[in-house]
Length: 280
Image 1: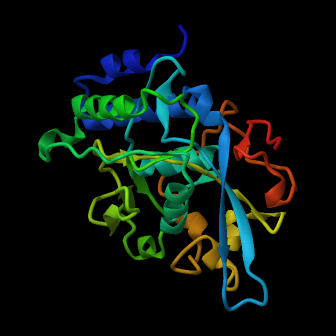
Image 2: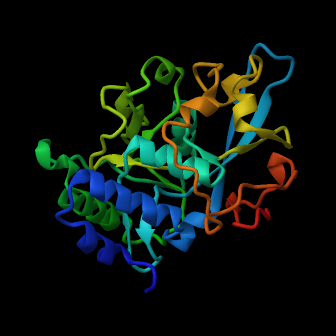
């Protein structure tokens, strides 16, 4: 049997309890059942720091949209909890963004969408709400082809040093309004197994290019002079452990490979797109 389409997956998990549904979501992501346009990473640029002799510049490669299940023709952006998000990122050589990266994605997005809040209540975590919210997003994007760098339509799971003191929690941030202000400030109010319709998983490559030189995200985020390229907080100590919240270790090959080119940031194509092979 082939991979499920988005609508088939919605029908498959409808009525499941949250734990069983979450396992099904994780299985689909780890099997590589995502639309092909998500495999074409987009680049964003960040810069800092005023205290340095010269401002450093970093190029970070991100998925153009939030993780979805299905094909280009039939997919659904499916919220997953923080444990699933970190497991999937880790399995394929990705990380979660910081609040600084989320803001940069919004500023540099090719398509800025308006947040679509829905009536709060117990139904916020239901499959029906997940599907309904995706339909609202789809309506906003009706004149745009999938694959543009889109932002504003979900809250992001993020990395923050505050997670080190709140191991059982998740960190969320974003859902930017048109003026660039997020509806959701950085919050760790929810437990790591919570997900509602407003949450999204955007993956960021572990490989970051600093002034054209490839660096590990994890090394850079712990380097005092350069950490602010990636994080308003500066150094996030032992960030790798914050991405290791469960014991999932399966690794597949269907996701895009992290970029390997050593091209300088200014040498990428105007669209900022990088293919799964890592070519500029």
